[in-house]
Image (cartoon, rainbow over all chains, first blue to last red; front, top):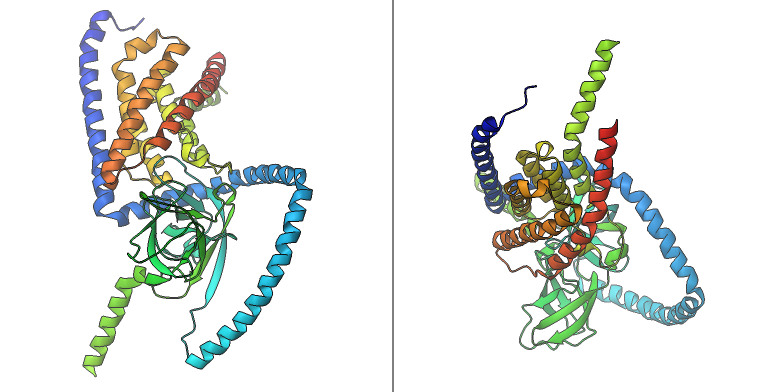
Length: 299
Length: 172
């Protein structure tokens, strides 16, 4: 019987409208505040992000497994249909690769001999951590994936993520049991690369499309479609020589690279633990250098 | 015995009142599952937008503005994009629906779907603009347009499922 009468509604609704308008303003303001915090203090945002990601990773891990199985079945069915033609191609490829193997063996031996002759500093050792891709946010603004390994598995920020085909991205955020991989195609991705046999240096920049762009090429560089693009190792973040892709198009607008990685079938990523202090550890290095200098002064 | 019934009744009420929020959170999580389909990743539908819009229209009492904010925040945290633009986009969608709630009271399913087209366009445009400003770069809006189309196509399926679920709840 206590239904509000017409006059009650007339009194209550302006008040309610004001309250809701105030709440809207407050929350939009809060969102803008968060945007500013994200710009100025990325540490807090990263910590919160990895905490939330850690919480949902077990769920995603469980859900993505049946999806993987299902897509595996579809892939198998697809493979069965073109078995004979694929077999032929593989036979040809195998013969060609065997020749290459002989060449590679010879070059490897020659390389080793020349290295010892020149007393060259050996590259730091590499070890791998394998993780499953459990999350792919998609959307128009980012190109990242979530993996089910984190801090406790030895994942660190800046490590390279590769598939069997080539470089896929680098670790951008690390939680306890999850990590976020910034893919090569993301608008924030910048990778120092060398292009072609001439080994022209460049920076490969993503722009959320499937074909990242090459920037900062020297004026003398002659780039052709089909040139191989590999990591240069500059900056010490990535090991040198990881395959990335081939130059897909050269035009007035820019040079585009087609990565080797098959984005749709990226189920497992190998994270390269490259034991070299890179630019991302710059602050730690400076700290260590200062400590060493101070110790030197004290003596 | 009586008391137990009261407890169950209360639990049932609580479950009903928080289900829109949790279902929308599940949609956010669902959008994260990798589907391994070529070229789909850039155009996954904006599922959270559908959830927020649907319950802002049908049960505004169960989708308060702070819940919208929280959903936006969790979505922005999980997708790895800049925090803020996604929240403002969802808030805009919610505010538009609340502003025109009288219109939605009598609207049919098809009319609500058409309204969703306008609301989603506004929400995604705001999100895009703010993302560009926050990243201080121009982000190509073409994939966003496809995302918009896919979201449009998804709306009737999800809305139908939600309406069914709601009716099931009411019958019991």
